[in-house]
Image (cartoon, rainbow, N blue to C red; front, side, top):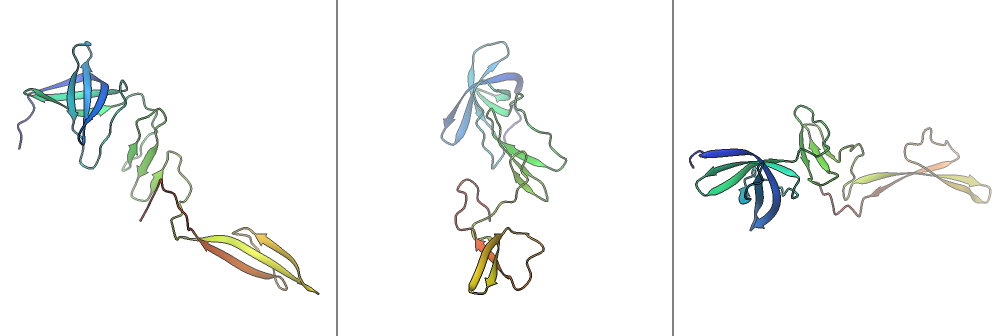
Length: 174
């Protein structure tokens, strides 16, 4: 186990970002506009973020010659409040996109309220109402899903279902 950091600094600004292999490297500068320095951005396991230059603040820790950014944040983002027990993941751009996770739901987007269909999910396509006539069929009408009450005989009602056969390449699920 490594020793605690000898020094920590707050009040730094991220002025540039780069990659060193899989590691995000932030170029930071102190409040006094002193010299800038590069520091590896230490992030939680399973998460990697690369802030936009000149939009983030940082806290730095240093032990010896190698500074590390332990915490970075963007104070200017217009994010909604977060409920107790909720986790959010968001992008770092001008119009952040949000994924919100609670024990009961995963929401894709700040105002998400529509269900998501998955590949091979069955869907309700409504009904065909066929009215017989003296010479065969006198009319055929499509009725949207959820139409109630359904027509009664002599009208023949056929329920239509389908399967999702093409799906989003942006979002996937189990």
